[in-house]
Length: 191
Image (cartoon, rainbow, N blue to C red):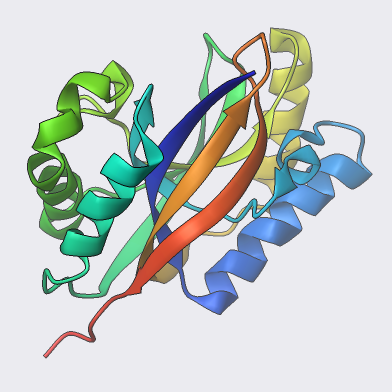
């Protein structure tokens, strides 16, 4: 089993509940139980970075220092349901604005000392900010799942309220099986 760490944006309770309801709807309709099957502290999120082969003390020390940075809550909008065809992951697309880019850039630059351990999919200007809703084994099932979600999805406005550090556990097929929240930062309200 592989292990890693992620730094993630967490949302206000209303939007978190909305995303949970989408996860449950996929599971209850036998379309995908991937998100509901992850053990531990699986919560709706946007991953800012994912690190592999990093020492816990090293990333915790950096995260402790990161807590001293003034980070402001930001409001975002989601307006589309999309799919990564290569992985059959269905997700909520998040409209990118300067605040979203700032979150990605700030984390990348603050944690630059371990950037060689960052997944190449989580580099600024490469990442597609998204909130995973489902993952399917094949494309045909993913299309059915996408249609189901598209039929019930409503565009949402939501707030990012926390940034958290998670420990991730992957199986031999690189599928996330468990996550554990290690630490979090409550974000400041905008002035």
